[in-house]
Length: 342
View 1: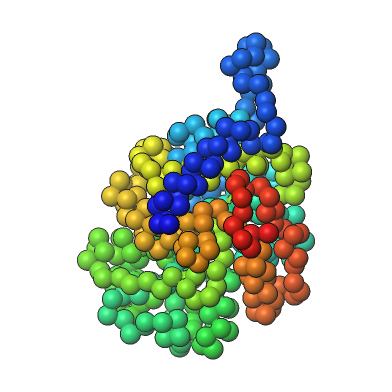
View 2: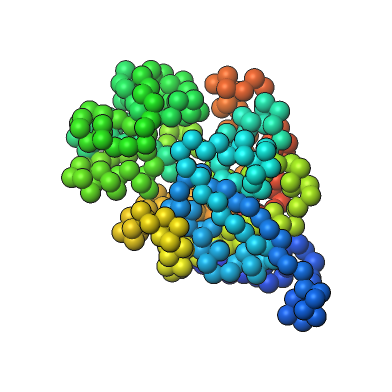
């Protein structure tokens, strides 16, 4: 089955799940109730990690096409940006659900923070190493004794050094490409959906090493606090299902509704750039993963998450293994989980 056919099948299953009632019980339609008896949809504040962009497309598709409304929730998508500390905002009660990475949540929980992963929206992390086309760096091992501009404290830094028996100097990431364009030997952290586009537009010839190909494979996830989940499980379940449906539709259908909302919220997003990002997500199997590897849209597997925890312990990023069930809920994703998901 092709990734596109798999996504269409997923979309059909999600539509059925939403129509059947996400909470597992049927409710009268508000249209059939007296006007004064129809309850308003539950408000959900959703925080992203950056300005509106195609990498958030599934959420905007769900908003634009009414999937959240159909699920009985009123979702407010609140953009992030540089310097925005999403976990702190969540702990302060300023947001309900947010995007993140599974490895980061495992670290937070190991420190006693009450976070829980409730869903996956990207099977592969789009983070990568960006080099020039003529660079001698062809593999992760080739990064030895070089300088890389990246985000200090990122878990992938320790992973590459230990796993490949290499060392390199880190330059703090400034979220620009000026230094990269000025120096053919420059290397920096990037998203395969983003910086290569601008490098190419400025006459460069970039190549990338996708971080998930190194063996370090965090999911891009949806997370909340244990307290919010306990008091709002129906809303969380509805949000995960509608968001997954939005991603299936965004990646396999017409992404125009989401693109229009993104452009309205962020005028810097051109249609050309968004189309580039969508193509990159498809080419690198970022959202849906590879069906031949047993991956599918929205899937979390216990085995993969346990491997991530073990990696973090071996890297001494966390002191002892954190049981996966203490920070992951596998039962909130609609549809039958694939083998190994439980």
